[in-house]
Length: 252
Ligand code: SAH
Image (cartoon, rainbow, N blue to C red; front, side, top):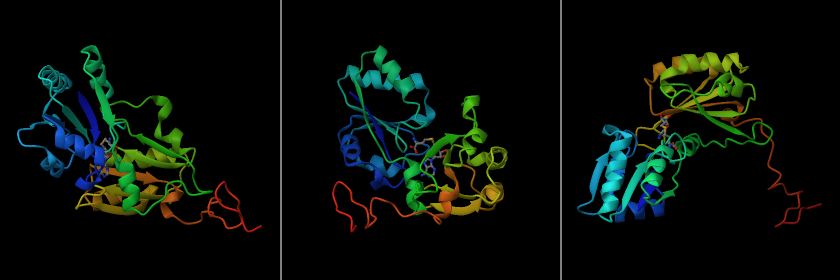
């Protein structure tokens, strides 16, 4: 059996209880060494075989899984954050399907949640934004044209931009060309929930300057939109004393 486990955004105690249990039972752990906190590996049992996938190809990773399966061992594939975002899990699953190896996913806390926590931020403020766009700039992995940053910017919904901290100049340009003002609030969150976490508040126009000033080029999220300022929102209806809900009678 192979378990794809979300390791969380960084802090070792932000893996789920289920994820931690799977790590402690595994015979083989293949972890994404570039971003998974090595502290989590201390929870493996003695004799557990550890592989850092940063040095491996897809075929090498799945060969390790297949060998473990032949030996009737349990494998944990540890991905950073939650495996469903930029985790390159589908291609592993397809190979496991072809080889009839069963697998299951254990979700994790994505870094976009870790970053919101670092900023004490609610992405979905009433009357400011009720949608979160999770996207990235094109890098070695292309982004379909219809999903350009500019096209998403036109919605003025809050955007969380992954994998793009090294391209803040180009990112600003695309956000501006899509209709964001230069002074739209933005934030750069570096290594959310790690001890070296850094949060930098800026604007769409100053993203590049601030990233350079703080020497941030990777392992960061860029958050853009009026929600970042956490002001000018309307109170929720859910907790409004005047409103009756399924669980509570309103005053009037
Ligand atoms: N599956 C992961 C994302 C993997 S892609 C998740 O759910 O978070 C790797 C990118 O995620 C990094 O380039 C960076 O943009 C972001 N990232 C991962 N961990 C981060 C953290 N602790 N703080 C800020 N950004 C992070």
